[in-house]
Length: 582
Image 1 (cartoon, rainbow, N blue to C red):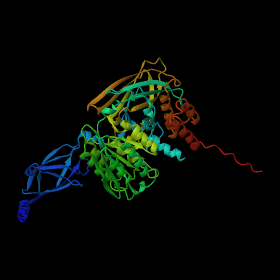
Image 2 (image 1 turned 30 degrees about the horizontal axis):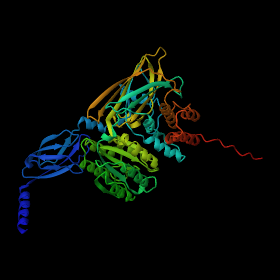
Image 3 (image 1 turned 30 degrees about the vertical axis):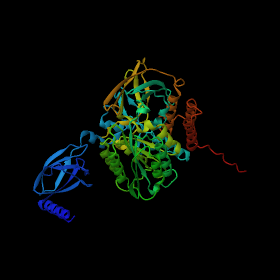
Image 4 (image 1 turned 120 degrees about the vertical axis):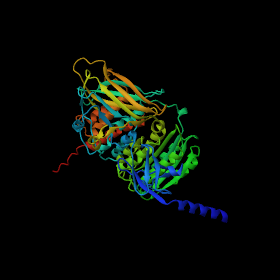
């Protein structure tokens, strides 16, 4: 033992006495952000790697005054430089084009060939609110093409439900029409078991404007065979901070995750990270067969402390990387009321953090809960930057819907970076308005903002709805052409599909009930958003339309009618007769 100690001391002494110089510096990207975890190789050190610290800094002892160093980080151009110990190294790594695009502000929809100077003008044709600007009518002879990002987000409907049930006015920015439509899209039958998308479309009457028509396109995503669903590597990232100490927050999430656990298989891996006061790994990667162990950990959680969201996300992603399954569903599921009050707090900083991990092939699902403290915008931002999806859970039935009934469409991706582009036929359509997919003000005002595609889950049915003005002359059979571009998660290829949309007019009384329900929801969203396009449409008319499109035995469809009735009472309270005084 003594001899071993002498050898170790001699080795330490020899190593350090040979290190006469010290190479110091910091590494940033071309946006000025300090880069943590950059892999640094020095020619004199052989294959021994060094890494930059949290602030992008590094310090490496050398036995000579200069050395060749090679730097690499996923998503960035590798760099090789000759470094001198006499100088503090200021190193900049250039982002790859794919990485740079991720940092740009995201548009929900975009008009092809629209000049930057005209963007605000056209966006301003619709009603403007604090965060969103409603899409207005576009003249087809000027701009026949538009595009938007397809996704499976559906948080808006359950969040709106929470406001109305509590007899509260709904914030207009909480009303995202495409998410309300997504909530009900699972009711459309989808038998598409191919590896490609399929589509159905038709033209029908516009209930709120008899001079116009509606174009409805249903996009059917490939549906995975349940027996062939790839293994999952899921990390539950659960907020247990003090703000979660309410029945509709942490206890609701505990019940939700236990529902999900019940459906796990032996090929699935689960980890649990909690944050509240501190960050803790409550469960290291565990097989889905160990349901009792997983449930016991979930039951043991309690709420206290502040919310170190930044470090918690880092720990969760590192766990996901450590148990990464090639070809599997690798995903962090963040469940919180969104109150990140410690660490990187702003949406911009959180965006940067999530984008830096996206390159590893790990998606992010965000589950929002609670009221009063709930930060909708942060969770929406995180999910979109994390190439994932976003849902709001306000009751256990919603948790069952999202995590059990719609498990595959919520958590198993079949397509990523999915963008739908439509080109209208000028001979058939004089003007069009995309319903939903409204852009944020800051994205519209940012000339560098770009359209980023979304994630589509197995069997999901996306709905694209346009209000259109038809030409006065005889309408050609072809109304428009749709192109869907995406990265297939099934066969790892980039795909592009074309669909021709025919005239195919169906009176609204004859369209299928699910489609009439979609039109009802779009009208409901318009009224809640105080849209100028639906301001003459009444709650009575919405109720009449909804009544023709629901199954009285279907709980979710019954709930839609109930919420419309609640909204009418909140927004149009009956005038009380004044008591007559004699």
